[in-house]
Length: 191
Image 1 (cartoon, rainbow, N blue to C red):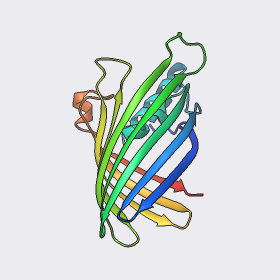
Image 2 (cartoon, rainbow, N blue to C red):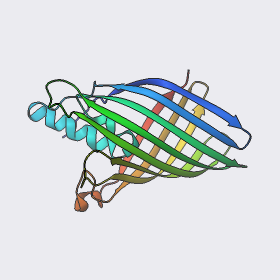
Image 3 (cartoon, rainbow, N blue to C red):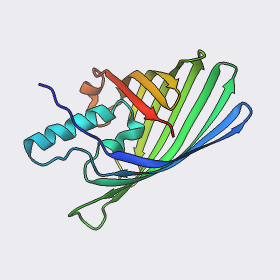
């Protein structure tokens, strides 16, 4: 059986400040609730597919949630030492449930990510960890993954791909998470 879904569409502003070997990227965005729904059996399959795909990058887990408008902010310091780079990403997502929901329908998610990599002059390779923590609910396991990624910048588009492994129980449960390897690819448009 196969299934295809669409996640939430995000629009935002990205900026960058260069200070020699130190760079600071920052982002503000809004993610609209366009993810495939969760009504009925087909909807549950769509939701499962979206969540499974988001586990490749827990920092973008909110893209998988139907019926959520998300306000996203982040700051990403990056240090370059020749071809080697070290990058971190710290951010928050404010998840606002849309539609018929109880009064307390907002959640806050903290994102903490890190990467170490090498720029080979056209392709960047990195080892990364991505982590999301739900701050507004106690007892919820963080979503975490480790992975290897490659990025190829081309004019106004960056093509990327990677292999990641969910770590810990998170959304899948301990047994399934330990046997799951996720392949992902994508495009990032640069305007």
